[in-house]
Image 1 (tube, rainbow over the protein chains, first blue to last red):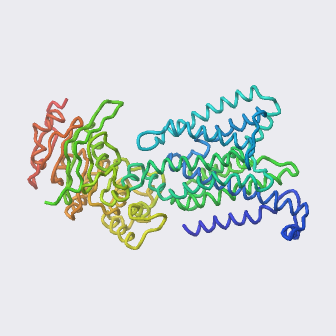
Image 2 (image 1 turned 180 degrees about the horizontal axis):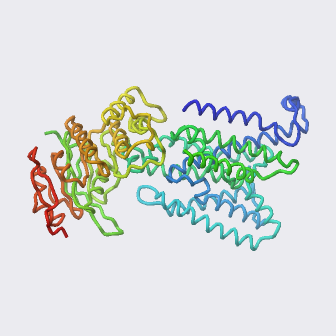
Image 3 (image 1 turned 30 degrees about the vertical axis):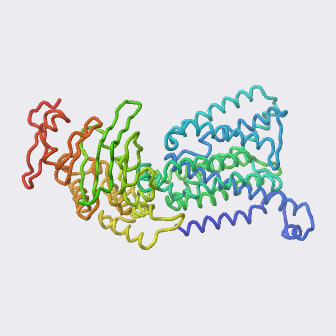
Length: 328
Length: 265
């Protein structure tokens, strides 16, 4: 089991090292080293200021989405749950669209763009609402969480349709592009702005990874073995919500990574959630950064939104996993 | 006699939707004692057991574990004294038998650390007790219903509790496995562990328990040795007529059979 964790970590590092070299413009080794010596060149800038932050953002976002998906699938005892099932992306999308459709609301604060602030606010509002609805004596009702999440998603969908109907066509194009997901950032500002929400969120999930094993055995069993189930449920929901909100607000609702990566990890290295969490982070990050490398080269010089790649590449892989499972 | 480890006093619990309520004035469980909780469907057996296990918090009354309130005892610390095997045992992850048994050591672990040598020994003991040593690498999906039950039991045994609470552990097992399961529980009780079993099987309850608690409509109706509780008039009052109570031909314990042509309405 530990061997596979090393394998995941190796893959993660390999993508981290290789991906910045991939793109429409050729970058040579001396460009990269010259940049460190203070000699500026367009290629050096592309490597250090465009591709590297983009690769890092891909690794972080993909890793985070996969970890949240892995934790949520256990928490809700449902293999189809992904980070966006809980209405977080619905709220974020509605927030983002509001910022795009009503430019007079534009505000920027510190490293955060207006769109990002609105998306985060939307995500938090929906998280808060869902949590309030599902709260009960001594914890949260997991079933209500799921139902409330799906319902809030539908309501946000209604709001998005309303804005779509009323908004200026230019806003529609921008919004549609946002919905496809993309990690086309320039510089490190965005990535750093992600960390204050992302890291605590992931830490909360990592801390409870062992307890998640017990929750997979059922609530009664977990309680009997000394697991503080209500606290674990609350922390995973809040931590997962924080991480998802921060990722979605920056890169848009990139689908599939959070759904299939955890399944792949479980197939490869078993069900211990501690392995699954680490493996999902490494594999999810590698997958998204690799998909993004494809996104910027496939139709170069045109860039594809990475969400299209994850769906087109991830879908068949998922079907392959399913067929192999049925064949067994 | 030793002091009771687990005491339930003036317990009350009410389900808002149905208006059904449970009231239990006193239930005490000592070490080395085998207690069967019996009663018809909807009598409150599982609710009572869940309250005793701290899985369900009662509306009123006190659950005391070694004299301290269970609700104010840290969960991990409570799990070192009190084991609970729920009725529904379904895992969403396909763990191996060994994985499940090792999870029973959770109350003894600190932070993110792993299992110590002592923990592994406790796991081995629990696998040996449940006769699962040869199955330890098997996955849940490769086990029969009875083996799966034993795997979960091994996990609770690995907690090394003083009192173990089991909710219908032998449902869906064949008669041989049922007897085997109860015999193991009896051995554990003889080895100083307190055993509380909720069961529908009055005969197994009669043969293996020291004491029975008969519940009906959320109230304890009768409590005492099997010979005092399993009597025709008592059972007729709770289950309705149509139950014949005889004596086991090998041991002097009551057994319960359907009455020939009785009016079980």
